[in-house]
Length: 160
Ligand code: FES
Image (cartoon, rainbow, N blue to C red):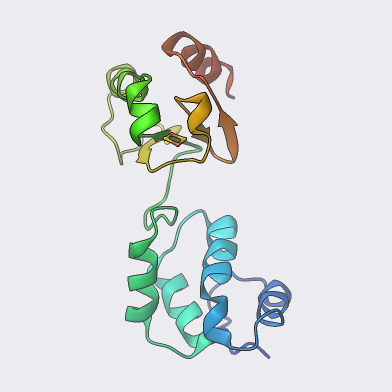
């Protein structure tokens, strides 16, 4: 038994048990549990923090500090499409800033914000690991390399 508090719907207990079974120390499963929770809930809520803390027997503050350290964890609900524009050197030198400015102007949002219709969230993120094909934009789990403003417009228009 995981010890997960059943009042939170986000964690499917069989998946939690599967994650925990891969680590001799429950605390080592914090990151995989956070990824699991985010994939199911879309973001890491206070309830998620508390539930994971209970599962691995640490304080919610410890889980919160882990979440705040990693930029891949979101603590607020996101739009349907999370536009993650790499801002690290190669991408920045190859047009990422122009992409961010374009999204801001086109959709009237700033980095970290979501459009009023909850369609797009814009994030400036650190290196996405494809520096040779900069600039790189990740939309949800899909990578797009060598992105131009024109390509980005077509891509975003094509999303349902
Ligand atoms: S600098 Fe953008 S992918 Fe590495």
